[in-house]
Image (spheres, rainbow, N blue to C red):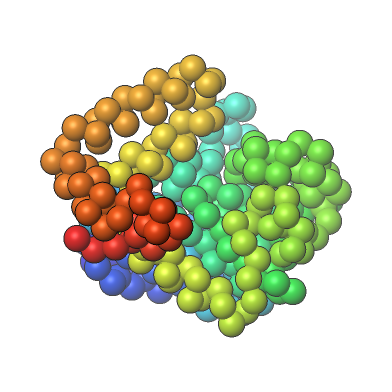
Length: 277
């Protein structure tokens, strides 16, 4: 898949890894045009069987995403009210990123707010920069609430009370706090985030694609009641367990020193060697 005709996203491909650089000056506001491109990218990634990992970055060092375009919201509010309670197109887009097979990673090196934060929470992983990354939900101070899945995702990530502080308080959350509370996977020095995210993307891309795909699905199923989630886990575990690829990988793991003292002391490196064949 070529991923052509994007103007506000710079899309590049390196094998199974897609990189999307947000380039919507002056501050990466999510206008209707940018929203359209993000929604289209979600559909194309979902349909691309060879897209294993997608990394999102920003061309602006100060802003990952600012927030959804308030001028557009004002225009929408002047028009007729849509059906109350129906999922919005923005919620649908966020849900698509969360449920698609492709692993999504946000490299948040500047501010992220409002709808941009909601979209980032829909990605599978988020990494930030110490002393630079800032998260803000600015909706309540301007008379609305987060409407792009944020009120449901943030409490699941950082807990109800902390989500209340960010959403109802409208305060900034710095990178160190965001890491400690669980919004960010890690807060890294500015000169390390790029290499860390790239290495992680390449590591994931090197693993058996069905295991990555079903691994994401079973983690997603953790939102279900426990018994239902366990059924999904058991089903996918058995689906993979009896494949030729799994048998080869498990056998190779043992050949390289799995289940030995020396091998298990370096099991992360050993498992990466298994992926190389």
